[in-house]
Amino acid sequence: MENMKDVEQMSLVDILKQGGELSNQLIKNQMNPLTSKETCEHLIQKILLTYDKTIACLNSSEVLQSDPSPIPGLVESPDTSAGVSPKIGNSHRDVFKKRKTMPRWNEQIKVCSGTGLEGPIDDGHSWRKYGQKVILGATHPRAYYRCTHKYTRGCVATKQVQKTEEDPLMIEVTYRGKHTCMDVPNSSSPVVSLEEKSKDIINNLQQKTEPKQLQNIPFKFEQDLKVETEEINPKVVGCVPSFSFPSPWTESENQDIWEQFEDNNILAKLIPPATSESNYFSMSTFQVLPFPHGISSEISDMITTPTSVTNSFFDKDMDSVEVNFEPNLPFDVLDYFTTCV
DNA sequence: GGGATTTGACCGAT
DNA sequence: ATCGGTCAAATCCC
Figure: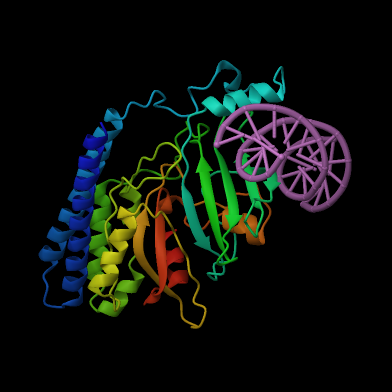
């Protein structure tokens, strides 16, 4: 089984690398005014195909994994079913027994505040802080959040938020458990097909004749990215293309991106334009969260606003996506978030 | 007054 | 024994 998983992950990496190369080609072509629209369109189709391949690969690996709890959060012991408060008839001991058997996985995100994006950040969920602890060896305390609907809908999702050692402006978020409170379809965030997104991207490309203007392209690849992670160690098993903007990126930098994936280094960083007045905002990697909603409200939770709020930042379009941003690429943040949201 | 946060205590895991 | 995760009473805030 292990070997099989290795093989699958190897092919996944290959597919993802292919997607990355295609993305680079697309950018290069886009920078060339002589490139035909059809060429770009063809490239985009191929890129999207790599997504499909990866998803298919992931789905097959999911089946292969003998996870006895295909729907985390719904396979709890009876006392954790929706609507039943653990306060009733539950001692501490019961609670911890439950925790032990609870299927769980986590995700880690690092996001940096100070992006100039004042205001709430929304992962689509409301969280309630239930604890805070000083962690050994950590400078900053770790905050514990649970889904507001834990008792009303039996949602078992929790997250931990902690400022990083190296940079207090960076926070690390660890998710646990999938939300089971999102059964009701969210009509406000309709699913967009790959084709529609492809057209959207193409239309944007058409409108951008100068490479510099590429910075205004709403990036929506992430809508299609999906990753399933299981267990405690986060694994990048998703279809994550390398995506380069017309920036002075080097091949080695792109290689670094993929090495990050291969190292399962799951990070998302929003590094603010510390020294420049312009908004620089580059993407190097994408990582997909297995949540209905990914990047969450922890930034504002930790830094600017109280918890248990519904914030908006990446909004629905950024669901399930984790992104590395680096301060090299010109990217109009405000424009991006006003045109995309 | 109701909901959210804080914080000390409890308990399982290591 | 120590650490991490959670509970729950007290407190705060709207």
